[in-house]
Image (spheres, rainbow, N blue to C red):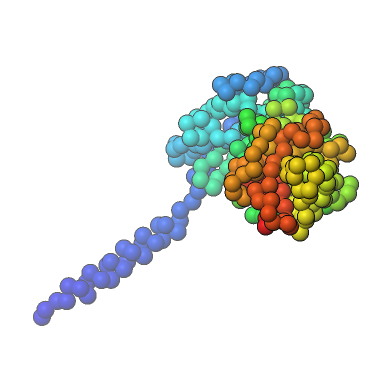
Length: 373
């Protein structure tokens, strides 16, 4: 009688497969011990933070163990002085991809943590820290905790990009609609011209997709801190907001008026705010009839209760050959009151009417304006 070999081996293969499934079902997480002793820095150590790129503080602790004698991973966890680490301010991995029993943490990171703890720039405050040992999903916090006293840097580390969001802003509270804040030369200063709504919060953030840092103006509008509390204004209005991270100072001024100004007849036309840093006036009639048909012009902005000139980068100009281009870029002259210098000229004097747009949108590389026929 012939034997069907497949009929013998198929049940055997099924048994092997089932046995393998049963083994996987019995898998369990590897348990680790907590860190018993924290070595450094000493408890209550005082650290005056330095701005140098290599300035750092070394954190060290006793080794924990895993029940399979395998690798253990570590994180240094920071909280406010009276925090319980249930919602830590910051988590820093150990050196060597988390496997070392020490962590080198830069002064700039410690300064950032101090800001998250609400310690003002250039002032002294206290942080609490401990170590979490882990393996896979198993995480164990040390029963030990220490404190360090830090004196923060005078400034705040500047982000690479800055955005404005919140229910009080033109973009609303949806993060993806946050407004770009213009970064100025040097990398420490940012500014934006925008509308803010009274009593509704606005906050500055470092990303439109995944926020890791937030910044809030103080109640007097002269400083800011690294937190997500949000600030408000007392009245609806158009504002220029400036943040200087080198000094952690801020400035918020209301823009109440923007006028187009023809130099010789001293004729003004007020532009209406359109949104997101853009003003416009339609269907105006330029006055070329006075004093040799002079067509020089610039703009007056009333900001913080005082007038400021917005004009050309050049003290004197010839009429442009086109209606767009760098000729129309705007420069600011806060103290210049001369009624002819740094003025523009019209690209076409034969057209009797025009519209004018001033674009101070912070998302653009430069501030500029247009004469539209």
